[in-house]
Length: 211
Length: 211
Image (cartoon, rainbow over all chains, first blue to last red; front, top):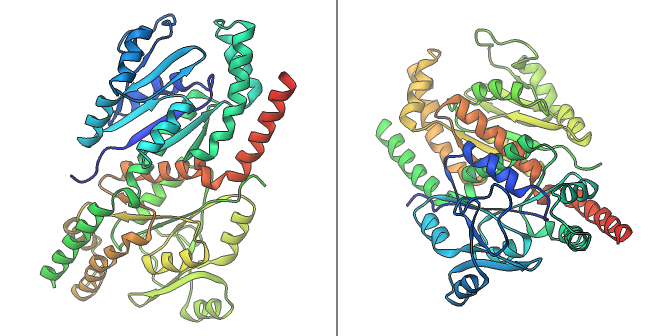
């Protein structure tokens, strides 16, 4: 196999716009498969089973934890979120690239298992903007907003655990940056050393036969 | 200053298409300034003084070497090529990004002075294709072709000194890859640590004043 698939982790504080960026990114990159997460939270308007999430009961989710069927999972603001392990393992082993859109706790767990993944931290242009985005959803009580916003500001400290930061000022620009990161990583020498060393040997053979 | 400029070095074997990729890339990236090289070789058809190269006599070039006015220089196939030092230094210090399009000997010299540069190795899809491209120029004698091609095959060994390899199968795709590498590097945490640490401190201040 020339190269195993690339694991791309798009993460960041709640309200940064991870879901929006993901949704706009995927149609532009046919080489990137999306790993659908499981959650116990209620579907938001327009969200579909198996597309945005696999919606589970708490009992179902806890059974998945017990059976070791999750690459990462976390309880966030009272709901479980997790990444089914099998899809990710199979795709990467077959050489396909996989995109995970997960929170920061989850990303840190994934980094332990896949340190060679590409870890991208998506942030809003400022925390002021973040406040407005969380409030704009209209799904927050004052109490849950304080929990979310305080946590988001705190989570910014984790930037140093990531490889890249993408500022989500304009969705189109953020999508272009994430796409660029994936393309750049696929061109990186460190990820393709075996392949290039083969190419060099072929090159030498050619040169010898020419001379 | 948030971040000093990025030095992007596009290099690779003769005939890989560095000039073509550069020319197509620059109009797509207003943030990237092109460093025009000096050379003692004869202009090819359509090449303009100060745009493609600064064309110099051997005496003028050797005077620049003596005066330490070149970031890198090399004698390749009997002609001198070099990068004027001052333009690169001034642009980088002012925070602008600079693109160098230079041969492999030159890139290795630049890497010693600017180890934090982004080093991109442009290669043709195969050495077979490389033969055809060099011959297609119609400016080669059989002797100069053997020198160029043998050297190109040999130069492939230097891939491991670079950060990225871009295969120039289609010019548009190669340009998109180089552009992606520049964007990705500008998003990398390691190049922006100081900036993000400031952002984190601002974030905490915000959070405190909110609570």
